[in-house]
Structures are given as structure tokens and as C-alpha cells.
Length: 152
Image 1 (cartoon, rainbow, N blue to C red):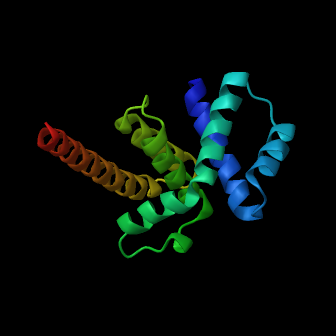
Image 2: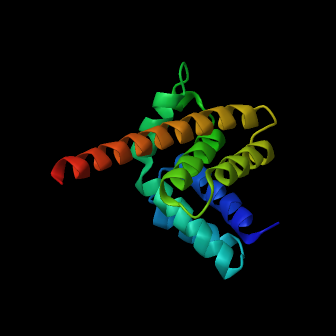
Image 3: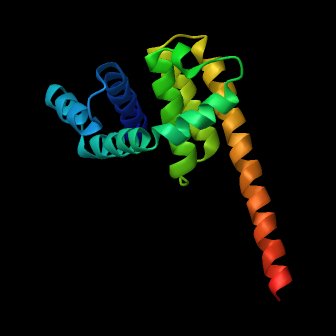
């Protein structure tokens, strides 16, 4: 198991605790690491993911809400919600990780921490968000090219 996968596992665990306790993410991270040992690369990656996800939760949740038709975010388990939030954060903010890897990792996290049926749900939500982000980026690129052409 690679260090990035372990970092994602740790980030999901932190996000789960954060959702349950509603304490500041820094406090949750401090408490979490006191109880666990991890190599520095795992810890650094997990902290970046957990903190970034926590800082952008409002935007991330709006994307999930838009995609999860007939599902309210509050109805999801804290585990599934954390995995989805982490996946969306990575799709938005970790461009060096291919979207297919982000989604595959989230599916595996769902199977490990939630249950076998959660993988399909996570896949559907994250793939829909991925497609929306790609459409939005393509539309923005077209708009930028049109603006540049008009300015010449």
C-alpha cells in the first residue's frame, strides 16, 4: 500500500472525527497524531488533504448537493460524507492526481470504511462532479479564447 493511499485513509479518519466532534480541524489533527504514528510523507499528505477539505467544505458540499439528486448531505453517513468531500477536494485542488485515480481511491476507501454498496454511490457522485468540472473548464477555455480573439 502506497504512502498516498495511507495518507488518504488517515485523512478520512481525521475528517470522520472532525464531523463527529465539530472541533477545529487543527485540534482534531493534533489529537489524531498523538494516538497514531505514521511516516512523515503520509502525515504531510493526510494533513494537506484534511485541512484543505475542511477549509473548503462549504463549496465542496454545494457541489455534492448539486450532484446527489434525491439525497441530502445530512442523510449520508459521516464516513461517506468525508470520503466524498475528500474526493471532491482532490478533484478541485490536486491537479497532479488524475481524476480516475481520485475516484478509484475514493471507491476503495468507501469499501474499506463504509461498505461494498457505498463504492457505487461514491463513484456516481464523484464521476458526475468530475464531468461537471470538465464541462465548466472547457466552457471557460472557450470563453477565454473568444475574448482573446475579440481583443485582437
